[in-house]
Image 1: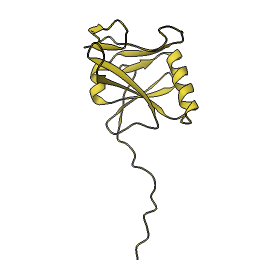
Image 2 (image 1 turned 45 degrees about the vertical axis):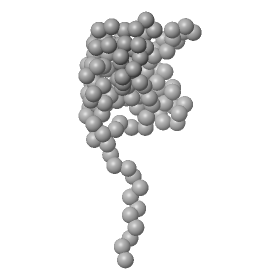
Image 3 (image 1 turned 120 degrees about the horizontal axis):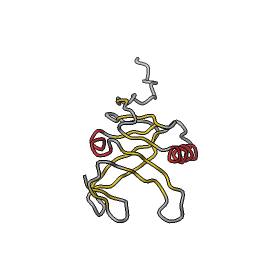
Image 4 (image 1 turned 90 degrees about the vertical axis):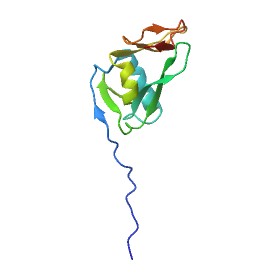
Length: 128
């Protein structure tokens, strides 16, 4: 009789390591992301930055906190946090900086993207 499979660990994702030339995070944004990860109980987690279709100008950013990188991701360690970007989104965010503004109006995460040809007036979407 065969013993049951007791391997309960999930497979290790296959990802690449990048650097701040892909995406950089300001100290203010890093502090906020670190606090959010800790609040969610995943201090070793990652911030996923993706570009998806939508918004006034055609493309918009999507950010999410996750436990670890996924297959094919590019992992960047910047300002004490880990950021992951999928290969398709990397084409649009290369050279960008993520900042956080703590303000009542127009506060929140802001992406300074040198690849954005135009941005909408609300600042939530862009075209490349």
